[in-house]
Amino acid sequence: MQLFVNLISYAYLVVIICLAFYGINSLVTATLYFRTRKPAIQRKTDNLKISEWPPVTIQLPIFNEKYTIERLLRAVTGLSYPRDRLQIQVLDDSTDNTADLVDRLVNAYKARGIDIECVRRTDRKGYKAGALNEGLRLATGDFIGIFDADFVPQSDWLKKTIPMFQNRKKLGCVQTRWGHTNRQYNSLTRAEALAIDGHFVVEQTTRSRYNFFLTFNGTAGLWKRTCIEDAGGWQWDTLTEDLDLSYRAQMRGWKIELLPDVIVPGELPADVEAFKKQQYRWAKGSFQVVRKILPKVISQPGLPWYVRLMALAHLTGYFVHPLMLATLLLTLPVGLLIPGTFRLFPFSVIAGFGPPLLYLSAAAAKTPPLGERLKLLPLLLITGFGISLSTTIAVMEGLIGKTGGVFVRTPKLNLGNTRKPGKAIDHAYVQPISPLVWIEILLGVYALLTIILLVPALGWGVAPWMTIYMIGYFYIAGLNLLQHNAKSGKTQLSPLTE
Image (cartoon, rainbow, N blue to C red; front, side, top):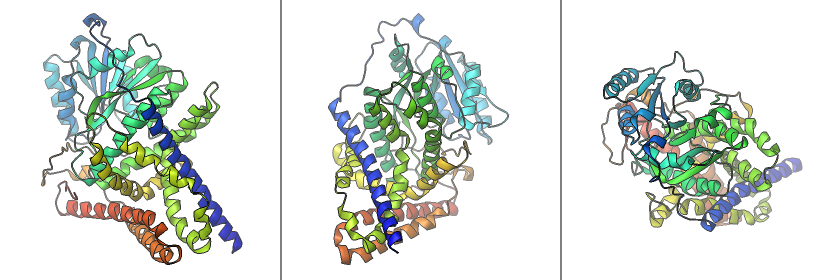
């Protein structure tokens, strides 16, 4: 029995120390952001003559995107750039009637004199990475711009990104900031938007300015073709080919920079199951990259220790979710058997301010004012706690599972902030509900039970965090079931919950 008690105690302390590490990382990142906050890098384009604009290929990797492909092509064909230097590739792996729509649209734009082609493969080997590689083989551009199906670049996007590369031989990629076409669609999209704003405005900006490793986020970025080729091209032994290539390129001496004032709006998943599967893919893929890349980063000669440490925190960021789940499961036995353990690490309370400060610091163009961010913070917290079970499973699969895997796309439905009840949605674009929802409900009950059993003995100190767990699991599971029931009744997207 004593051995069991000791194991629980040590496990809890290890979990709290690890959580504190990630909390302190967020605190440091936010502090560095405030320390060097300045206007985004601006490079004048007035001195560039038309003859100096380099050839560019825009790649549009799509798979069954019939709701967004027209909007995407309208935006990309409207880019303000010399026509004789702009090639557009629709990398279409579709298996539904999107393919017919693509053919009609591509032919129509060709008739208007636009250099656009559809690249269609016989199989989906390598998924998105495989499609990008196939497109690269046929590309004519010295620079490669990439947009997912739900992103809508402004016409001056190339005129603002290409000049960043002027006289900078080792700049390999420029990432522009994600905006949101449907931030206000429902409570889930508002929470997602706050998280993404924190990532781009604070995290990516800080990494860019301090020369830490940072990421091409898979879309709304412009690559130098020689950088992609020098780094080994797109590889599909992980589910996050963007993160993988980003690190391989930077370890080869290339730089990636964020251009935070250039914003490209994209669509946020409004459906809980789609959001969870997106996070699942990102989490699993990131830990596949951990297995593949992190040992090389740690042993890379010439890297300062703090760059290695920030890379560790960056690559393993999704490990927070297994730690959160472990904290929930361990709190009850620790509180019943060894309650004194709770008093040993008060510094973890300080570390807990890190993530909220990071998200509240995301003040930039087209982000909500501070008051609204404060209101959204509890929603973001319960959303993060609520998806911790599915993300934990993804992390474990990424750590111990096979490389690669099935790339489960996030459906894009051309949603805006104005909700339109009754909008018909193809069943194939709706994610089936996962049986994990019932375990999430049980975890919410377990958090409630922890409160009931520990408050009489230990006081109300344990209640706030357990309440967040309880609400988080009930919110994610409940919203999932409500949306699933609404979709089962009729084939339409239900804009549930305010």
